[in-house]
Image (cartoon, rainbow, N blue to C red; front, side):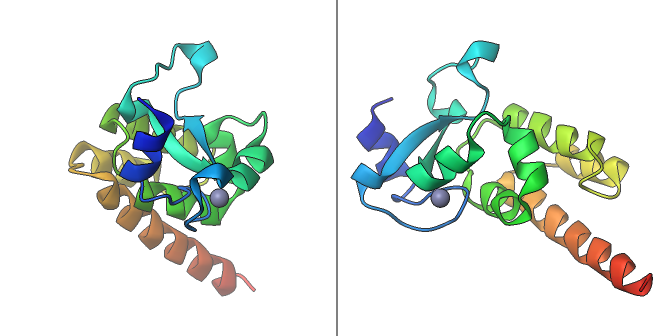
Length: 138
Ligand SMILES: [Zn+2]
């Protein structure tokens, strides 16, 4: 897939910070890294601004999303062209890392997945319940 076609598909918007950029400010990011067998098919590519791509640096996508909640919310909201199996793998890794509080509910939610928005809604619900339980403890 050509870079310009990818950027056009994603509306020139970075999937991590959610902002729109000129094409010169954008870069291509692989959901499944090339070194792990990820290919250049449209469902494995997302648009990322240079700033986010540099900040992500050597981190894997699940690691990056685990450490940056805002990027996590934007990714699941915006990466709607990513293959469902990749989204599922990322969400399951986040559950394993304890970033989403109830992995069973998340995985069950993913089983009924129609698009990335289903996961985004679920993550948002979980973020809210995590915030609630945090403030309950204080
Ligand atoms: Zn960005």
